[in-house]
Length: 342
Image (cartoon, rainbow, N blue to C red):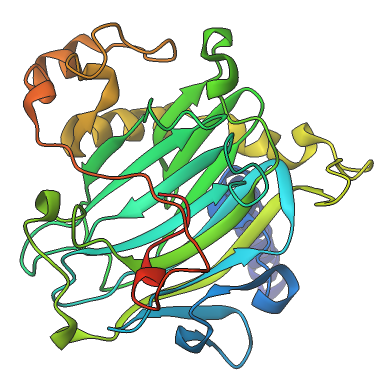
């Protein structure tokens, strides 16, 4: 009787073990497609201060960094290397309380190398009046095409100042994707008609916080109030997963293949596709593809959704702000709070 009982227990244990292993395998298979599964990097192994050094605070383990904005300057950091395509990511917690007029940017660019023909991919968080939903935009420029901004603007379904969320940019020769956590929110497929407008030159990863009172919140209606300073944006779990390029020689490391470092992020699952469609229908409130005043003929990469076309029928009349700027070492300390590139 005891032996039969032990045998039954053993069989149950074996079954439970097999089920556990199966579930773990399924979880691991999903995690391979998850942006959060990428290996992170310590700050001093991949990044360097850009400006406002005194407002950059690093954690003791060097895995996290805080950027501050006060009445004297903003701050920012950049990756030490340029990358020829890749997956770039960070968990970010935005400043809390009254943050109108503040821009926190997480983006790739090569403006310091190609001043007049730069490429750029942006997340830009546009400040917040307490009690109102946070707004942000994504954008891309290729070959200095600043007169053809490809902005999309959205609200968030959560308060980004309460806890960390992961924001990611995937850049390959065939597509560009923006993620929040594991949800893709925007996809740009490379269309040959885009020509040089599709980012094609090696870029570095940047993060900045700066004063954009003249346009960021409600078109400049609400300004930065330094009574609430310092404004702090926190970054952790930084990811640089791409093909690094020698900044002097501008060639890709021979052992690196774009497909090896980006292929497991490039495929969008049906669940992710559904999540992206829901996000765009519910939270996107501006898209250049539906702005017929700016672009009477939609730009070549635009895929027009009839439902979104109906939603954005008045988009061209929206007050749209934003000035393309370039960071300069010669500016005053206050002006240096503005982010590099936009």
